[in-house]
Image 1: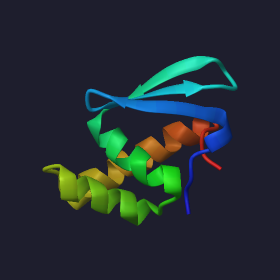
Image 2: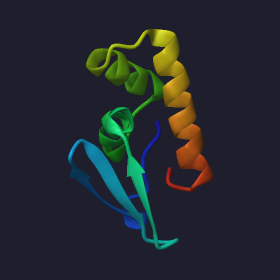
Image 3: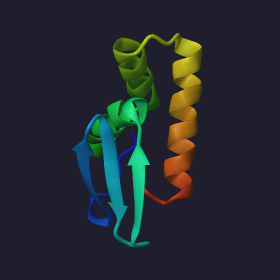
Length: 84
């Protein structure tokens, strides 16, 4: 199960984007629509399969593209230390 670190992050949805403040680094990040769909699930905790299902359900992408996008998004969040 993948979950965002709630004590480290403050975030808001603004015009179909997620704007995030990484409190530990004092840095702002923005997440696009597809990232926002995954972000919402990661707040409560989700599996990679759930992220892929969210992408294929909300956007016109095939499973292979959704898996690649989910993997890249997870990797980026891990590199930033934003996942538990």
